Image (tube, rainbow, N blue to C red):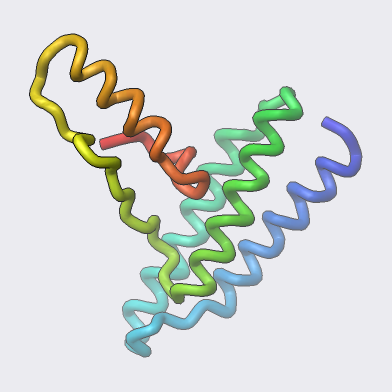
Amino acid sequence: MTALTRRTVLSLYTRVLRIARTWQAESGVAGDTEAERKYILQEARALFRRNQQLMDQESIKRCIEECEARIEIGIHYKNPYPRPVHLPPRGLATQKDRKLRAQQRLRKQAKPIYLLSHDET
């Protein structure tokens, strides 16, 4: 990891921590605010720790782009939780061999950048 990449990752991490510290829930309820702050901190810690050992510059770049996208979407919509994924047309095929593989490929291609770290359910 280069010094510039390291500085970028650390600045993103501190930015997320600052956002969590000042986060206010859209509903204005204190319980919701605390739950969302806790979610932001837990999610950030888990993802940054999981990606700590990455050495490939391309994968690091993708993780940085995902983090920036999730920050911007969370601030814009005032919702820290992941946005729903809209499947492409014919995204849910019957459980047949060829169709199933094709639909899995379509779902993978349709997955937005801000959800790359989440497993598909």
